[in-house]
Length: 94
Image (tube, rainbow, N blue to C red):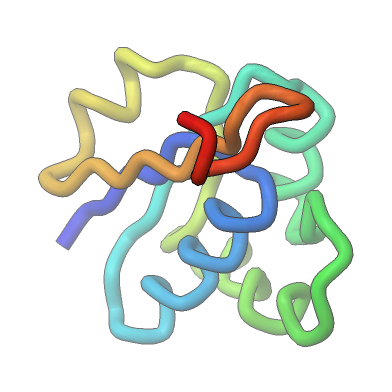
């Protein structure tokens, strides 16, 4: 399956990493160019033990990132939204 994960923070990055071992092609989407560049270079955009190893599939072409929502919507058959609440808010207050 081709999966698009919107948001490359903690939830999105870990989710992307867990989809990939099951054989899925995953594209991460974020407005933060530094996060997109880190993923495309095979590095985790966040600090999470073991995530760099999961992201090693960048070289195999099964994991990449983009800042273009339209591109991700076009190539993916499954869309996963992993955005964080605005600063100062929690999921319980939304």
